[in-house]
Image 1 (tube, rainbow, N blue to C red):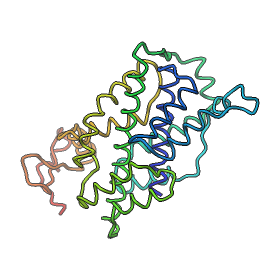
Image 2 (cartoon, helix red, strand yellow):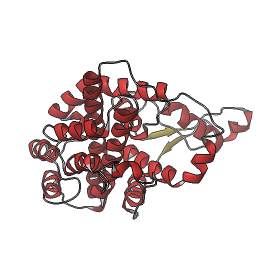
Image 3 (cartoon, rainbow, N blue to C red):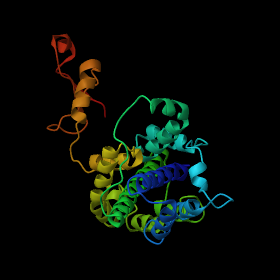
Length: 302
C-alpha cells in the first residue's frame, strides 16, 4: 500500500513540474514531450516519466490538437493514497508529500467551485519567466528530484516505523528492489535506495544517507527557487512545498514545538519535558493563579 501512496506523490510532483514548465517556462507540448524524454535518461528515469513523455506527444485522431489538453482537470482515486496518509497518522510519521498529493486530488474534484472562485478571488497570474529557458528547465528538474528524495524518505520511514511497532523483520533494501520489479513507481532511483539500506540497515532516514544527503543539499537551492517562482506567479506547488518544509524541519535541531507543548500544559496540564532535566521526567507549571493547586509536580511516565 505504501508504494501506492508514494505513487500519488510522484504523480503530483510531475504534474506540478508540468504546470511550471508549461505556464512559466512557456514550453509547448512538443517541447514537454522531449523534456520528459530527456529526463527519463538520467536520475529521474522511471515508468511515470516515460509515459508522461508519450502522453505529451499524443494528438487527437485528426492530428490537430493534443489529447492531454482536452482532458478534464479532475483526478480520480481508489483510496490507497488516503490509506497511506491514515497509516502515517497512526504511526506518527509525517507523509506531507503524499498528503499534499491527496489534497491536490480533492481540490481537483471541486471543479465547479474553482470555476466560480476564479471569478471572485484574485492574485498573481502566471507570467512567462525571463530566465533562460534551458536553465529554468534544469532548475525544475533538480527541484523535482530533490522533492522526490524527500517523499521516498517519508515513505520508507513509515515502513520502518510500522515494522518496529508491529514486530516485523523488514529488509527495506529488498522492498525497494521488489518495487522496481513491476509496480507503477519502478525506477532506477530505487537501486540507490536499496544500496543505502544495504549499506546501513538501521538508517534513520534516506535524507541522512551520505549519497542522498549530498543530492538534497545540492538540490535544495533549485527547490527553493522554483517554489519562490511559483508563489510569485500564483501557481500552487503543494508537493514541492511540502517536501521543502519537511527537509527544513528535519534538519533543524530545535523546532518551535516547545511553545505548543507549553500551550498544552496551560490548557490541559499535559506536562512537558525540560532541556535541563533527564529525558522521561515530566513537569507542570502554574501558568496562572488557577494552576497553582497542581503546579510544581514532577511526573514520571516511564
